Amino acid sequence: MTIEFQTVCEVGAIPEGEGRAFPLNGTLVAVFLRNGEYFAISDSCPHMGASLASGYLEGTDVICPWHAWKFCVKDGLWMDNPRSKVRTESYAVRVVGTEIQVEVPQPKTPPGTPAP
Ligand code: FES
Image 1 (cartoon, rainbow, N blue to C red):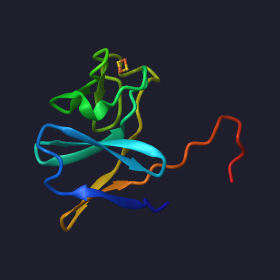
Image 2 (tube, helix red, strand yellow):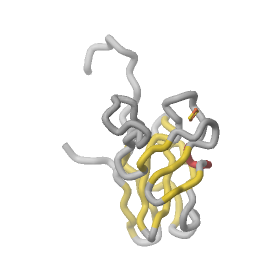
Image 3 (tube, helix red, strand yellow):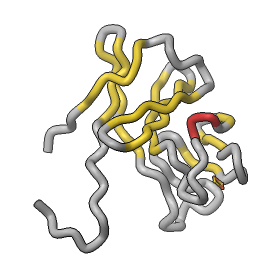
């Protein structure tokens, strides 16, 4: 399956050690820059929906600004309990020229909806 990418911003728009949120195909995606590498996860915290892009980055983990749940920005694992099913989606990121491009999230379909 081919991954579809879309430009979210220019290189330089996300300061080192910080995140920014971008709307992408109906999903808010949080893009982080850590040690010169970009990572993208869903911006909405699985706990109560806070914006993870505004969380504090500790290594490659982001700490949710509301209740301090911690998620790995590389794979979306919930670092407080990595074996839990709780996690946030993660997306591929690439830099093309001066553009930061993120894997386009699949549209969310309600449970029970038949696949197209
Ligand atoms: S909303 Fe993120 S930890 Fe509660």
